[in-house]
Length: 399
Image (tube, rainbow, N blue to C red; front, side, top):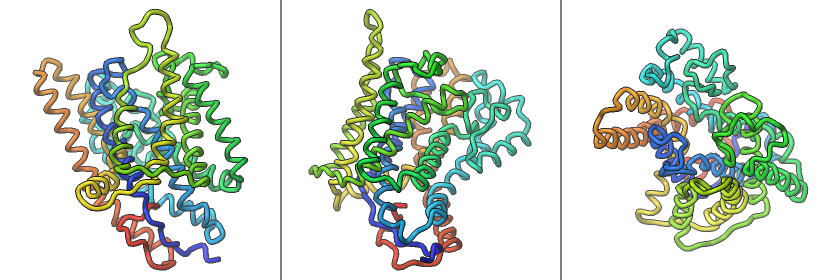
């Protein structure tokens, strides 16, 4: 076996790519609204953070589809190289972009920025290139993020861990064994969603009780949240792929997109009612992650989109799904600073700025995909692998 041969990429699940883009768009909207609503019950995209759990499930499904039947022709080293080529160029771009935008976030909400020297920003940027979580001593923003230049990178750090677990452990498991683990991980999700503090680590996140929000810092409680959010969705997606579970639906892309929109925009449960009924919100989020997201993945995998504007729109969303997720947050930092420094600006001005930032984020994502991500990945593939056959006819292979 020649482990340095690049195995041809499999055809894509186009709808799943497009759904990743749909969820990414809602993430951008969620973060823009956070400038004004924070995590309050009036947030128009109230459950936008659940998109991360959906991303993890999509990743698990795609990893199983792309690699489960290739381990007789592929080493762990080859797998790691392929995943790094797929993910890491945009990780570097996102951290570099975050460094360039860093001082535009200076405001009362981020008082640390004004006292941060340029060489410290560079040091943090080069550290961020490694994807190793940032220690609190290098927090140059004040939010205790594992990447203070580009907050959403925290979920990519968990994604990297999932890939390692898959390569060394879970790819060896039978369907039955994997099902047992997935059931255990589902129980962990329920424990988190219902705020059952069996470890004594969740008390510090009262603001996020009965939700899955968190996972972006190195405190013990945040680490528990992060690992819980990762394990069930990722390995449930892997199980769905192995069991070949598919649901064919006519107009699947549009029905799945509608379901994602409804689930992510659903208001928080148990807010403004008498007594302590926020547990209903935890029940809702557990149902989304454990039952509804797998159904959406099965529908997306079993359906197809062919021809016309639907296919074009779906492909566009798929192309920018990862770039917009990993590049939009520096704009959010700048938007927060602008809003903080211009509290008295007319409502129309705030709306115009937010809408402008949304479209600017889409433009930067598409430009970085076409001008940077695609050519860099192609260059790395040629440098790191020998050709293993004819590439898929799709311009952008699935992994």
